[in-house]
Image (cartoon, rainbow, N blue to C red; front, side):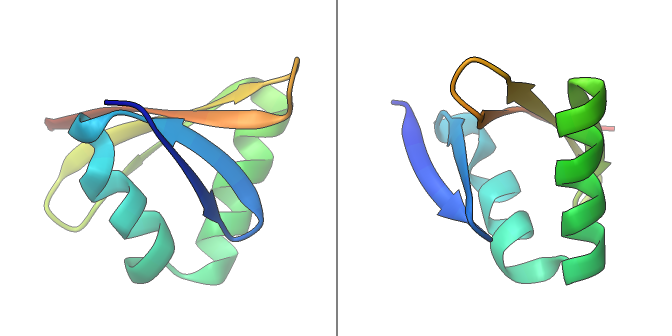
Length: 76
């Protein structure tokens, strides 16, 4: 099932498989890291990050509607 979440003022879309990535972005990451991830995705189309459990996620920026898609969730 697809979810739409507002995290730090950004709309992020992703399925059940990226729930841990949503959680990481909202509760476990540093605000300066969040800003850098969103900026990199916006200016370079995507950014990759790992949560503290070594799961890899990709944040993809959609220029058509200014939303982000969260993908991944596999272990590194």
